[in-house]
Image (tube, rainbow, N blue to C red):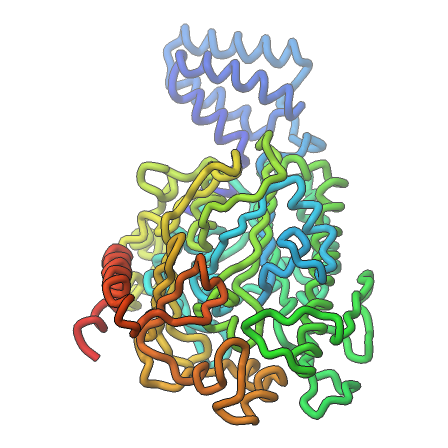
Length: 573
C-alpha cells in the first residue's frame, strides 16, 4: 500500500535482491558494489534485511552470502552505519507550473520577454513547440496534470475552491502523481498553488509555505527540502506559482478610465523582496492577434509581462539552490503552465491561446540536449512520463508498477464507503502516455492528434466544448452553442475586454467581433497550417462539408475511446 514509501529506497533494493536466492544475490553484489561506490554509505536499515532473509536460505547459501558481503564491507572499509552525509540521490524531479501563462518566453521567440533563466534552461534542454493543456481552466487542468486522466474521467470538471467544489473521484488515488511517485520510492513535496481535490487523493508528504506571488521566496523555502541529507530517497518537488494570474487589484495610478489589473504585481511600482521587478512600457508591448490593439489591452499586457519576469527570477533562484545542493545534474526539470494567458480569447476557451502552453524540459541524463521538438504533447502525458522517469511505470499496462487497488485501500482505511468513489472506472491505466523518449532527439514523434475538452470553469459557467486537432485541422464542437459564451469573473471585469464590450457587439475583438465571441456556432473548423490564428471558420461552407464530416467522425471516435459521457449529445440536443 502507500504506507510502503516510508522504507528507504536502498533498503528496498537490497531486500529485493537477497530474497530472490543465491543466483540473484550474486547479480545484486555487482550492482551493490557500484551502488556503494556511488553513495559511499549503506543504510543501517539494510543490515537486518541481509541476516533475516538469510534464514530463508540453506546453510551454504547463507555462508556464501555472509562471505560476499563481509568481503565487500571489509574491502571498502564500510560498516552498517547510518547514511548520514551520503551523496544526494539520483533522478530527482522538479515540476514547475505557472498560472495562466502562454508561451511568452524568449526561447519561444518572444523578444519582449525577460526570461533569461528559462531561456538558459531551454538551451540545455528541450523546447516543445507543440505542447497543449487539455483544458484552459485552472483546477480542471491541474487535475489532469496530477492524474493523467481527462476531466470527464477523473471527475474534476472545474474549480476546487469556494462554492464551486469540484473534486476528483477518490479512486484516482491509484494513479495520482504524488501517490505513485511516493510508492516508487520518492519523497514528495509541494509549494505554492494546489487547487485540486480531494487532498486525500493528491497527497504530498511535505507541504512547504511561501508567497506564491514571489517565486524567489518560494525557491528559498524549498532549500531545506532539496538539500535534506537525512533521507536518501530522491525527491519530487511540485512548484506552483500564482503568477501571472490576475489578482491584487487594479493599478490605481493608471490615467485610464478602465484601469488594468495588476496581475499580482505590487502597486505603485513596488517590488517583492529579492526580486528585481521588470517594468514595461505599454506603448512598446506586442499585442497578439486574438486581442484588440487598444490602450487598455496594452496596459494589461505590460502588467502580465512584469509578472512573468518575476517567475523567471524564481526559476533562476531554484536552479542556483539545486546546484548548491549538488543535485542539478541529478534532477529532471519540467517547466510549464496550467494553460494560456488570462485574457478573453485565451483562458477558458479551446482556441490556441488558451490551450498552447510553454513546455521546457531538461533531463540531465540525456546526452543530446538543446533542441526544439515538434512532437505534439499534452498535459495528459505528464503523470505517466514522470513516473516513467522514476522507473515506476509499467509500459505494457501504462500504469504504475506498484499499483494499489483503490477499493481495497479505502476499505482498509474505513473511509468513503458510501461515496461514489470511481464513477464506474477502474483507474488501472493512464489516458496519457510517456514522452520521455522525445527527450532523446528532435526526430521523435508523439501524438498524431490531441483531444481537449472544457465543461466548467466556475460553477455557473457550464459550456461544454470538445476538440480534436492534428497536424493540419482543428475541430471545435460547441455542444451548448445556443447559450451565450460564459465569462470567468476576472475576465469579464478585465479592462481589455470591457473596453470593447461597451462599444457594442459590432465592435472588433481581436480577429472577431464582440458578438462573434459571445455567440458561437455549433462547429468551428480551422486549417491550422494556413490559418494558425483561427480566424476563418470552415464549418458551414459547402466546399468543406466532407472535411467537416470526416473530423466529426474523428472526434466521435476519440470520445468513444476515452469514454467521454458527452458523446451522448451527438444523439440528442
